[in-house]
Image (cartoon, rainbow, N blue to C red; front, side):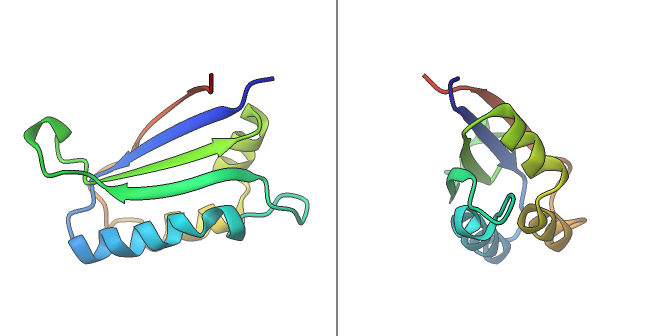
Length: 104
């Protein structure tokens, strides 16, 4: 079964808030647990270049999961992810753009 690569794009208006979000995402692979074990293969975040083609998206987060089921757990049950979402709720411009696919 192929791994899942997921890209999430965020519209975060404040550069300091972008730095804070990057720090939280960059420790997510260690912070997130499923059945008491780490399950995210990779979690990274970076600021995007300021470019009109970015359409206001200012941060990109990339996560790699072993399976779609792990990604679904991340979305619906993971406490570390819920903490990030709660921390930034109402502070970002709209919902993130999320794209995922099998990793080749």
